[in-house]
Image 1 (tube, rainbow, N blue to C red):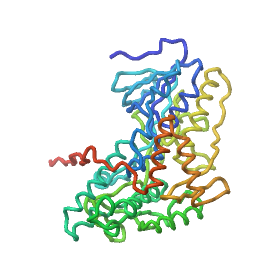
Image 2 (cartoon, rainbow, N blue to C red):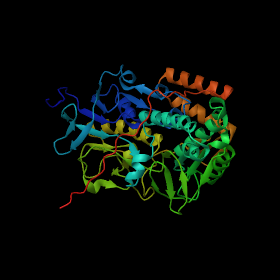
Image 3 (cartoon, rainbow, N blue to C red):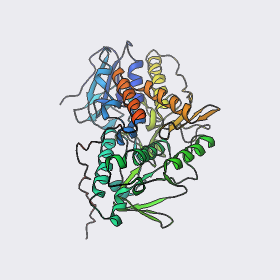
Image 4 (cartoon, rainbow, N blue to C red):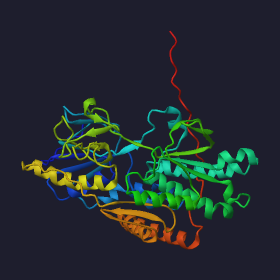
Length: 434
């Protein structure tokens, strides 16, 4: 296959990744004198903050996904290709992809992050991550499969199928464990009359001394209170050492028999090969300058979770949240036009609009600057912000209807096992004996 060159007189901007940052750059370049090519492994954008609701059956996958082609169908300077980028050739300004080589004038890496298992291969194999729609749907099926399987076991061996362990006390872990606890409290006995809610246990494991460590102390304390009220068993200052698919083991020697471990304890940047090793920093992120340019390169930029803009004020870079990627995307769209027009580059400054997390029905925590509030009003604020952030009118309407039914009935949800989840065959490394 021949290289896809830019035959237009305008510079060619190639964006890798259709996440929050990638789509903001593409939108910001609408009607500009550039050609935009967006590459992604999937043909849709995913609203990741609501993945946990897909995983627990509150929403169906299409409610939080939107076709990229439909999103940009009125943008004449935009092209989309479904592709897997394997390597970046910075010197020759070319990408090696599974659809052939692609050249660029300006490259933006907006590939986001994947789950970080910190090198533990057993946990990586047996625990379940939740970073995309496919993984969320797999979690939903696996939870339901294990509840079904528990009905076929005696009381002694049943517990492993009904113990659900969430590792990681950040917003994802808190929201996921709270949502599973609501299944336990409101749905389990209705759908499975042979079981009582006391038969099912939900654990939240966090290595630090508090959950929601990046939020205010008030938010952390209130979230812990809400989870306790839901019946979630919280284990703080607890490190996971191993998991073999049947038992999770902690550093203090304690163990929990469980078939289901949901891992949200860390993330690591993901990006194609070709970036200089000395540019990669903690968390497998690409170091960028204050203009979002990849350090040591020209005309290559990185934004969002995959980028680390390290300064004296931010020694670890910006937090890995959607608003950072969105603001960097809008900034970089303007920055590229300034560069093309030989105007002075500007410096990116992040405006923190606040943080929030929901912990079940009528319960949420919100931090906006120095303003902190929790409870019912925070829950409504959380719902409004997430509803309006969804892409597409249909998705907003469907999500609103699902939320309304769930709130009124206590028994809504999509509890279907469409495809039985089964772990792929494990390939173990075999040492050659000499």
